[in-house]
Length: 231
Length: 239
Image (cartoon, rainbow over all chains, first blue to last red; front, side, top):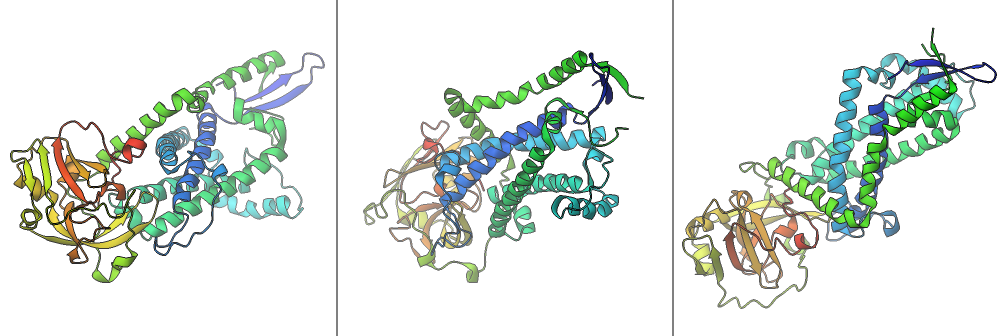
């Protein structure tokens, strides 16, 4: 990695543009692998759900919703399971690598929501949703972003734990028990998926709103003209 | 004081950083039709391998009180083909072959002479539903002992009256809750539920619990795994 903060000198005008290295390689790598893995996990998960779209008994079966086949991956239950049980390992390995990297590099401070971020949540929420004034940007992420990203990481962990409880309710009976039993584990697994999809929706809206330089930072690590003064 | 660089240099740095992400493109292999099937097969195989490690041979599946058992009419009949394959119950025998000291025909009376177990356990279907039933029968391990099965053989394969077939790994076959089941709800198995003998395996997914058994083979090599497995379902599928 080069210096974390640079000034780029324009050859023509000599003008200086600040740039900051925001996302180290492991974070970017995990982000994009996860993009694919989540797409596959959700698509194949919904395919599996189509086989029994209910959270009640088999007799009588009361379906919750008829999920369209076009928005499912794998073609049939067996195919859905193949994708799901293949990509779960990619998803899990990426998750462990990401968490390990964040902890050991200290980079987690960039994203981890901590108590002193609490007071910054409301001003940011007011700005985003209720036309409030924009609070000054100080770090890579504002308190609301930290809250969102930290929640997404927790949701990722929960998606794996609830999934293992559904997959192996006998061998991981303690996990299923923690979730209130096999039936509730299925409900949680489903609910966590929707929560992740909700996060992704918000994330994509913000990515669009924040423009090209911001988007490129997740590809190259470097962000030109950051909103904050890099330290 | 931040260091300074020029535009060309910055572009080069960005390109280098972008190239570091090329390993992500390896995932594109899953989109190539020729590679997709073998990759998913390998992934499922890895899952099965991990499942084998996760399986604990002495860990028991939860058992339930009689009050938690679903009534028989709410226990789904989930044959893949016909509900009743017209088994001749009078003259039924189980044909035992393979790595056993005493191959041959075994009658229901011989199976029923072995110690009887009653257990209320959960049947989990691959589709996602589950049902708690009351099952009676003898431990498969008892039967395997009686026929002198070689415990170092790797699999127990069964054939059914309706050309369904299944197999269990030896560790699961020897599990104390794995039953050669001949009763549900303290009544002889009905034809729809697999008369006269079916498998009950609380540590496995539903499709492993074959009904209307006709043949049982102890073997080191499986030429076929199971009806659903051979169409792409997990081979191990322990729960």
